[in-house]
Image 1 (cartoon, protein in one colour):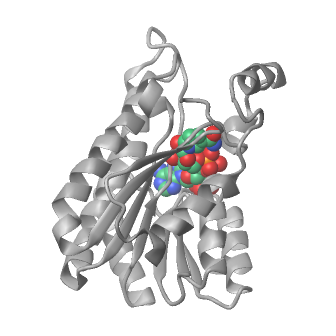
Image 2 (image 1 turned 45 degrees about the vertical axis):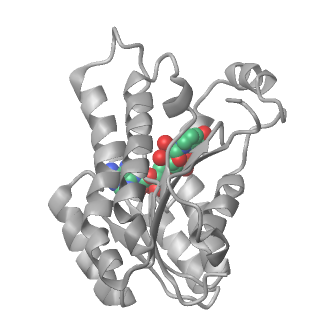
Length: 246
Ligand code: NAP
């Protein structure tokens, strides 16, 4: 489905990003894996993808750093001969009630989750426009749609990503570039593993499909949105949450 395409996926060393990277590689894409600091996890993903017979290379880069991202895009473009699919998945949480949330808790989350996506789109869009094609997939969250107590910073960043997605979709539609967002519900990754078992059980009670989602539940949709099956879909925010937010 993605044979010969070059996909750049941020936060691909672990969790949802890793699943997206592997799924796209299984569909024939060459994959640039972007991560923050976990060298071991990133090289494991790189090896796993290479063993599928496609090209893989990992890049350590803080997505919040504007000039580092500019350099990253230049390097990936040179190495892969261009980028066809951009997945903005890197994200963090610093959950606290707003009364306890300090300025750094707010700024760090906004800078990585929202400004990081802006940085990536900003520096990739020139080549997308030039070749009149490109796919942008932003990983937001149902927290950005519903809000969530203890996540004012995170929900703001994820709601911001939804605005970013729709604006970019409108700006680039005339150039045959699509931009969509996926809003996961509760997915089993390192990000959610820290939650106490009792809290998880309580949460599952509110999920109509009665289970925590798996990274592949998100990856399946990302592959579809990046494929030729999705050429007429843009500006969408698709929830993958077992019915949690309906
Ligand atoms: P995760 O397991 O915590 O993995 C986070 C990934 O992001 C890692 O690859 C990490 O790299 C990378 N990363 C973090 N900060 C970065 C930075 N400044 N620059 C570059 N890369 C950075 O997270 P996840 O649960 O898979 O979540 C992935 C995305 O889905 C996030 O945007 C998250 O908000 C969203 N989401 C998750 C859930 C969920 O339930 N899990 C629900 C809704 C939305 P290192 O390995 O190097 O640290």
